[in-house]
Image 1 (tube, helix red, strand yellow):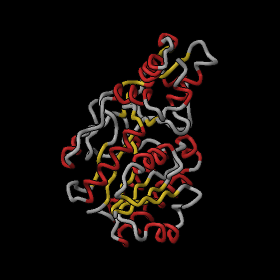
Image 2: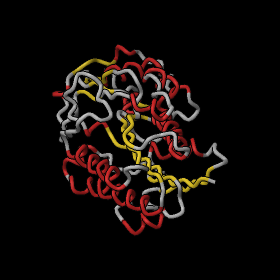
Image 3: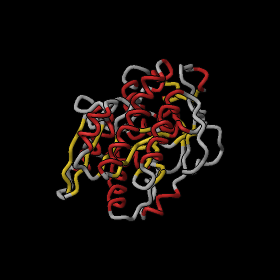
Image 4: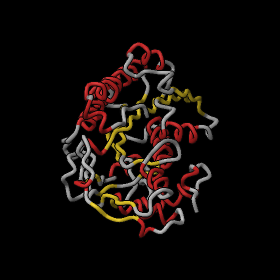
Length: 295
């Protein structure tokens, strides 16, 4: 029986991973929340990874603006913590699937970033995540898998989609940024793909390295908000376009976060679905949170 460790099991993606894995009778799953396992503790990580075949790492510092204020703390988790996991996996012969981000890129491109495109993060969060990527590449060149995602939303935890639907109850109009392009990605769809990649890795059918785990297509935050309003039975014209300079924040956001997906073919897997189809599936899912069910 394959033994799987899920770190960050209490978060949005972690909970979706557990839901996907729960359907598998051939797996023995260990769920480690932040309370259960501090990935900045190297000894604790070594003990947790022991006797597991695969580690799915969804543990991360995700506060982008907070990272700008305390880059050392963000890097301790997103960089050093990932290095502890990679070393432990190397020592115990386990494969590591680590979730990274589009923020490792500068966001100044005009065509989708390929998996091997040069990295150049423009904020502290991106730098902290890049440190984690480099640790996986260093310690697990043959058994480490980096899956970059972006614009993640899901049933568990606060995210852009739930925030927009929630604000609809108190505001007649919402001004939403229309000058940042990206690929909204349903966390459950990503969780399903991570498990499929783990299967392919264990079967020897997926080469190690970088994959881009975002939905296909592209839109802006404004476009995503309008699509969410439509699916929720709300008038999408209540959403109005604006520009990023209207909402200054501590961390600069990439203007272009569109990723390419060519490497999935090497693993024998298709890219994730179009973002519109995934969003529709999220609204139809029985696990969708109450704020999505306003219609």
